[in-house]
Every structure is written in C-alpha cells, then in structure tokens.
Image (cartoon, rainbow, N blue to C red; front, side, top):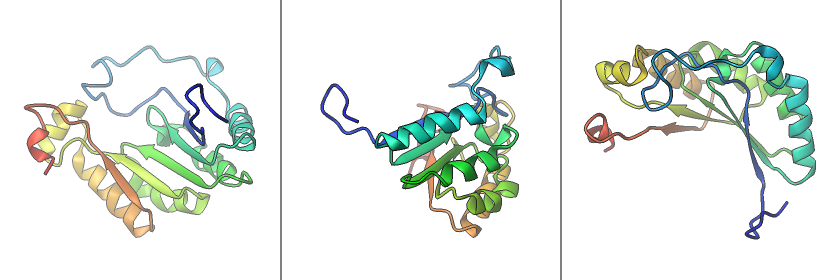
Length: 169
C-alpha cells in the first residue's frame, strides 16, 4: 500500500480498548471518559479480520495499543492469533506496565516480539501525581519481568516542563 505522498504503508496500530487503569493528566480527565458499550467496539474476530486483511495488503508490523490493552479480557489469546498471521513480521505491544509483571511470560509465549512501556517518571511521588494514583514500583517490576522474559523494550515518556523534564537525562 502506498499513501498519497508516495510512502509505503507497512505498519498498523490496532487499539483494542478505550479503557485504562490509569488517569494520566495529559491523557484523560480525572473522572475518566464515557466508555463505549461493549457492543460498539470491535470484537477480537473483527479486529483479527482487519489485521489479516491488512497483512495481505502489505502490513508487516502491528502495534497493539489501547487505552491499556492488558486489561481487555482474552488479550493473550488474541495476540497469539495475531502472531500466527502468515506474513506478519513484527508484533509489538504498548502498555503502561502495571499488569506486566504477571503477563510478561504469557505475552512472550503468545508471540509478542517487543514491548513499548510508558513510564513518565522514576520518582514515585511524581509518577503518582502524573497518573493520578499509579505506582511506579509496579511498572518497574513489570519492566524487570519483561526483561526476564527476553523482550526488547522501549520506554516511552511524555516530557512535561517543570514536572518531569529534569529526569530525561
């Protein structure tokens, strides 16, 4: 597939849920957002059809995102199905890491090849303030579990002037 600017399209970002277990200040209001009823979001079967069709059209990499994808029931089985699509070269998951400690090994067995983990601060109080209650220690434990499971890891950070910008280095 080629876009209107002549670039080859080989990457699909697939959001599996609008739900999240954090309320990051830059992403979501403190009270959350109105969630879509289950009947209005794509089923795993529908998303699999989209993914399989996209791969048949030249998509080589799928990044699974959310909200927080690890909170959707059945996510590991769905990821295993995606990993089995002939022609898919790379399956990546983006997560906030809160549930990763228990799920790193199952994700690896399912065929996820890389992880992007969001961690906006290493300072517990700053992380808690940015996420409105998240515990950075859980994310760090998730990162350790992902490393133990053999994942290449990319860490993501939203840099905010006067809040966490001094942590970049």
